[in-house]
Image 1: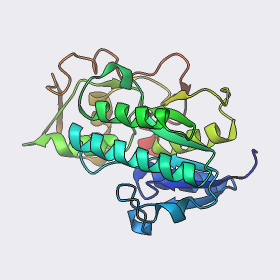
Image 2 (image 1 turned 180 degrees about the horizontal axis):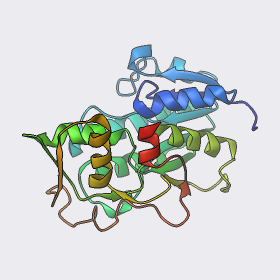
Image 3 (image 1 turned 60 degrees about the horizontal axis):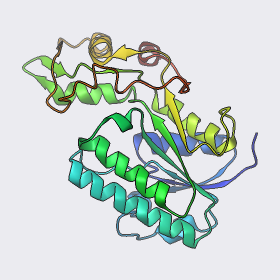
Image 4 (image 1 turned 90 degrees about the vertical axis):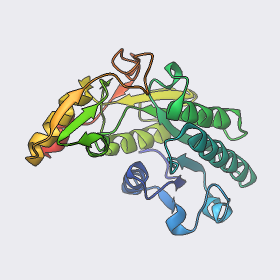
Length: 253
C-alpha cells in the first residue's frame, strides 16, 4: 500500500465522512475526525487550526444544513475558503473534495452551490483534487420519506448510477494512494455505481423490501425545468470509476 499519511477528514460524522474515517484508518493512515461534535467549525474556524496540525491531506466531505441555493452556497464557499487558508498556513499538501457527477450541466439550486464550492478550492493555494460521485444508495430512503403523501411517493424521473457511501469512501482512499489507476495530477475524477438505474425503480425495491404499502409515482420535477435528470444529466462520463454493489445487492446485504 501507499505510504501512511496524516489525514484530517472534515465532516467526519456525516454519512460519507464516517465511512471515510473508517476506510482510511483500516488502511493504516492516521486520521483526525473533525466535525462540530469534536469542536471543529469550518464556518467560524473554531478548532480548525488544531485539527490540521501536522496534516498532509484534508478530505473535505462536509455538507451544509440547507438545500437552499443561497444558504448552501454561503456554507460551501465559506468552509472551502477557511480550509484553504488554514491548510496553507499549516503546510497541508493537498485537499480532496467530494462533489457531484454531472455538476457542469446544472445552473441553479444545490448543484450551483457545489459548483461554487469546487471553484473556491480550485482557486485556492492548496492543490485540490475533486472526486465527483453519483447519488448514494442511502439517499433513496430519505427521498421516499420526504416525498410521500397519502400513501404515495412522488419522485423525480431521475436516471443515475447509485453508489454506496462505503464505495465512495474507498474511492477517496484509492485516490489518495494513487490506486485508482489515474494520474496523480488529474484534478477531477468521477466515481459511480455499477449500472444505470432510475429513482422510481430503486424506490420500488426499497418499499418492497420493507414491506411498506407505498405507491411510487414518477413525474415532472419543478426543480429540473430543463429535464436534465431524465435526460441523463446525472450519469457519469466514460472515464468514471465504477464501484460497489448495485442498489438491490446493497439492500439485500
